[in-house]
Image (cartoon, rainbow, N blue to C red; front, top):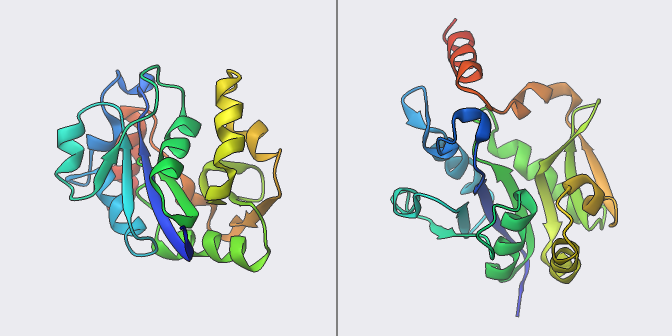
Length: 198
């Protein structure tokens, strides 16, 4: 039986990080802390339990004290594969999702997504910065598990297309769009660290 109105959180760290020379992005340091540590600290303030979705360096991720779950396949099928794995492990109605590489996110941003989902009776609430959605910042119903399983089994990978199949709410973050900055390259990491030090 799923827990009503309780929230499971998942931090996505399962990608190959091709633009980071295939380094494990969540374990790369930002201001002397692994990026994953910022994400789990934030997520743990709005969700319980918190899961880490990782497909490499499992023991390193386990040291952060949260359950580490891998994709159902070993083919690095993208963020939706991590979302599905979290749904399979969740015993709550709601799943909150964020990536491991956005260290500027605060608990209130995730709470805004969760509240928007429940207050508007949506199936999925996604962050929207006024220009575009940020599809790995989500609150969604775990009852969408069957839909997502079918979508992935058909060979689909694009998040946006799956989101649009459901009752989707775009949550306005236009006043704080910079928090969705994610770090894709080592040069971006250096720039962000420098700017935050100034």
